[in-house]
Amino acid sequence: MAEYELRQDLAALRQTFAAIAAVLDPSALSQQAKELETLASDPNLWDDQAKAQRVTGELSRVKAKLEKLESLEAAVNDVEVLIEMSAEAGDSSLESEVEAEIAKLRGELDSLEIETLLNGEYDSRGAVVTIRSGAGGDDATDFAEMLMRMYLRFAEKQGIKAQVLDVSYAEGAGIKSATFELDAPYAYGNISVESGTHRLVRMSPFNAAGKRQTSFAAVEVVPLVETTDAVDIPDSEIRVDVFRSSGPGGQSVNTTDSAVRITHIPTGIVVSCQNEKSQLQNKVAAMRVLQSRLLEIKRQEEDAKKKQLAGDVKASWGEQMRSYVLAPYQMVKDLRTGYEENNPDDVFDGKLEGFIQAGIRWRKQQEV
Image (cartoon, rainbow, N blue to C red; front, side, top):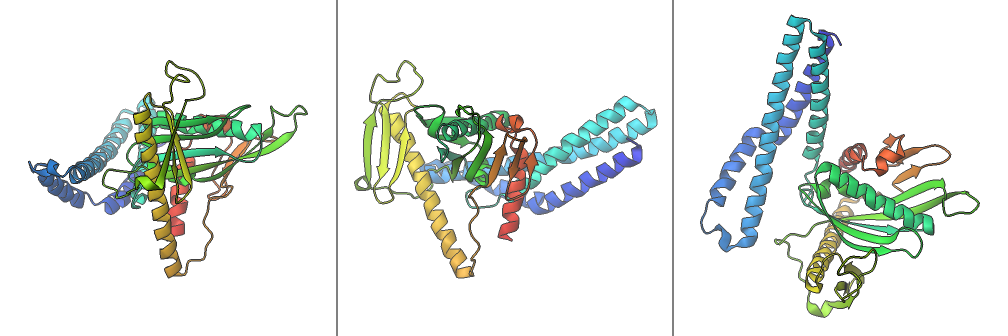
């Protein structure tokens, strides 16, 4: 690549960085960090634990943004130095190093740009993901398990802490449903665009005739509840049942009534947790998921009221939002954004960044 083209790429990087910095406003972030540090240094802060967690959490997020901006700005300046060194030395290997650094920075800036779009009330939170098999028999339950593995692989590659709370195994292949937490900043803002109905088309391994079959699975994503959320659930509104864990074995599986199922009577929401070793731990985890779902219902009701007041009559997106086609050709396509990948194996192994970024941009366009 010629020096002229490298400098063009550098100019594009600077332009993108400037646009991001204009939105994030480093000077405002610095001032916000100072104010939060003053609050965090108050010796009486932890008298109110909810407030303390909110302050320290926000301080951590603000500092992380500032550090990211500073490191990216330094990296962009370093690229300019590398271009000059390459031009002076006429070293093609150094030129290749510049190209690789530009590609890396472009990806990091894209990710940061997406983060500037995550400004919803709950976007900065962790997420609770529930996957349920739909129509399609054994193919659908197998598909649901494939989706669970896909999201857990994505979390692993992104360094997101994931905890499986409950899995209901199907009699044949796969799972009927699964619920897991993704605990990382902005996990909800990112993964929430995955909510909806997913469709799989393939030559069924469960069909003796080997015919092509279509099956479905639903993905639900709600924000992880925090201690500062006011989601009070009276004991009179819930029914708690205990039972023995099921599924692949372990020392405490199928030996004690440690699994917990909580039914929220007013809404009919049922939450199960069997991942923890004790009944008490499972009850605490199940209540957290129930609170998260009730919080999401509250948010949806508020959004519906706002849309009604604004005269918004657009249908909500979500049904059959993505197709995974394995036969007669291979492609995974998001039907909302048009984004697609031609290697389903990579997607099922957690390569979701392109779909998520396209989904976030699409969602922001719909809001505008």
